[in-house]
Length: 166
Image (cartoon, rainbow, N blue to C red):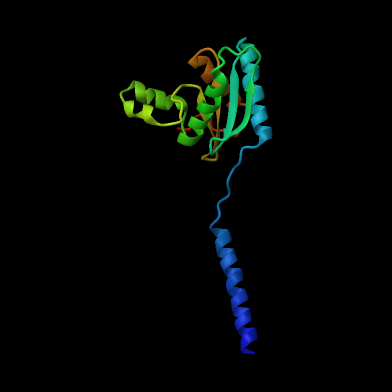
């Protein structure tokens, strides 16, 4: 009798512990390959409209590449590295990569020591319901075009916040 009562108490405790552990987990939005494809297609459409060639990249919230597209006759070969680096920077800093460039330009010289980050305009965080779920980066011919094309990519998903500061 004692064993069966003790067993019931142990199983009840394990069931409650499992329920408590479940309550400690968060729901996390995840950027899918399908969403990344939509974003890259929208960015590419804007680049085509502007008659520009370059690279667009989408990364997850950890900065890991989901999709990188290099258009034929890209303006710079270096864009293959710059676009994903801008996207990674935006995702991990949770703000546009231009914010780091601006900080450096306004005297925060120490920002150049941020290893493996790209402090250049053209990377934007992808924010859904207040959570940064990734980043999009563009590298074309000018910083202004990079930003316009990255913004066009964000516009492909209607529930994305356009600016991380919002």
